[in-house]
Image (cartoon, rainbow, N blue to C red; front, top):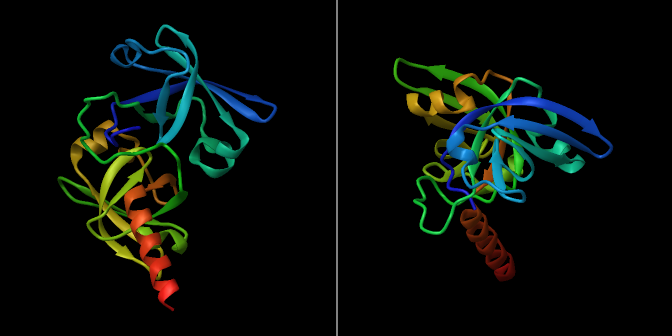
Length: 204
């Protein structure tokens, strides 16, 4: 499980395409490699990965073909920086909302508005996922827990605000229109919506 609070923005140092998967290495800061072991779970841009190699600060991961096709990891390039969060431990503060690292969909950035102290970004996702995205509700974007400020069900668009600290510590400080992000729907919201829909359907 993850908390939705990004711990570091880290560079991809190497990428290697292999049959059916892509191997890549990320340079993590010392505070994130302390106690890190092979097999540990790490969220990379909101996608749960298993540590396969450790060489000092250089940590390796493998992305399977399905992950490459359904998340932004498929377009990852050497030199890119990615959002990193190590898995939460018992007793850790949940600063955002509980997240699994299982991506529901990808969303495209369609509008960016900037003012002196904040930035709002509007995203477009397949309308079927808008059943679970509500104003004032949670959504996970590239591993970051965010609150939706506006949701347009018909168009499949929703908007979130970013404070300067979030822009500095995550990839969202450099995101541009037409970029894609990984979306993780809040599982509690999804369960509630699907339960209500099922009950309503049974009542006919």
